Image (cartoon, rainbow, N blue to C red; front, side, top):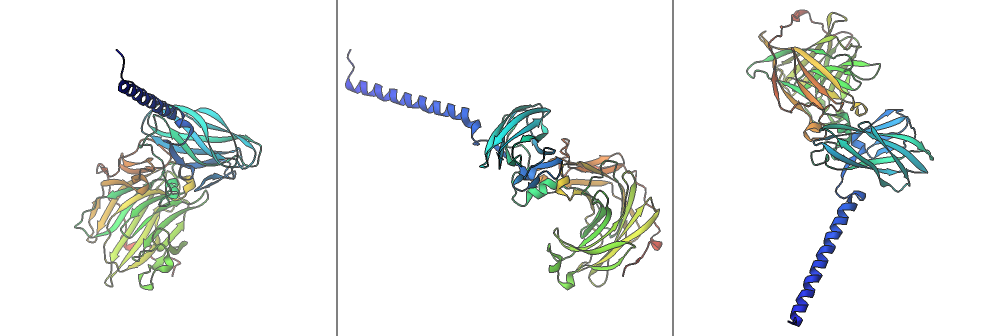
Length: 450
């Protein structure tokens, strides 16, 4: 039977539609195939917030834009990410080479691939594919092999895709809120002590031990924190350590020069060899510190006094006891205006204050915590809540933990370890504490101060 013109036309239309459909399918198929050679669908990891130099520290400058002026093959660069899944990772580097050609090597889990790059306009160079066997942190190590110009490369980011990469991959996503700085410092972690609300707390006592190897440069092991300040010990450099005591002004500013005269912290007295002044950048107020070469493995005692006065002020005084001297030292005594309170919001924390040391793990033990009321009653502080700062809460870093270790509370951060503690977890330790014996009447008063 002969087909009508209408039937022939319909058949032609169907054929065209099928042809178009196949073409579209082919386009999508080839698009999926070539997607790895563009940057669509990839996860971008900025170098500026996630990378550390090692080896020759003079051979490259790490900035918010990434690694710049990388001249030395002795300088290694390590970028850290944390994956939630096992599986494959495909990786590209965004590189520009100012002059000549450079050969580099990228290593993950002990397997290295070479990259040859040239051109100053910036390109994505494919580095290869790796298999990740389990969730956790991954170190991505870049080293320079040889170059024909003065600089190996400027490297701004990594591009990632694969089964191991998804929305749960952890790294510092952007510099919004200056998070390249905060992310490279690492997460700060805290112990918040449960304190009876119906008591007037006049004294806060704590003991601090930092084990050998955990006393990393840039660490602040803060023992006695309170609503208006903090008191603890630091590692400021390879040759300097401090005992630091600070009180915030009730006037909110990061610039101490902006504090009105009637809102400034007043120094009442200070101990021998104690330096005093003002601080800023993270709130502002009065600061004091004693340069003291405290030792890893030794236990140091911290005692804080806080008492309101009749003129709407509160006086805070800090004392430090070391086994090397077997005596209490006064650090300083400050008067805080527009404040009428006993000690409240007692806490301890661990932080790294130098971004270049944010890849180094540190840990501290806090033991035998007590508060003493204004009527002389000692109360053991045997329960805490573990918390962390906004770097952790933004899910930019997950190398943080805290809780109970035997008779101690502990805090641990940085170093990209995998066993983290869930934030806001509460811990209670066995009541093994023994109230300290302190001769309050004969505690030291002002030394060479005012």
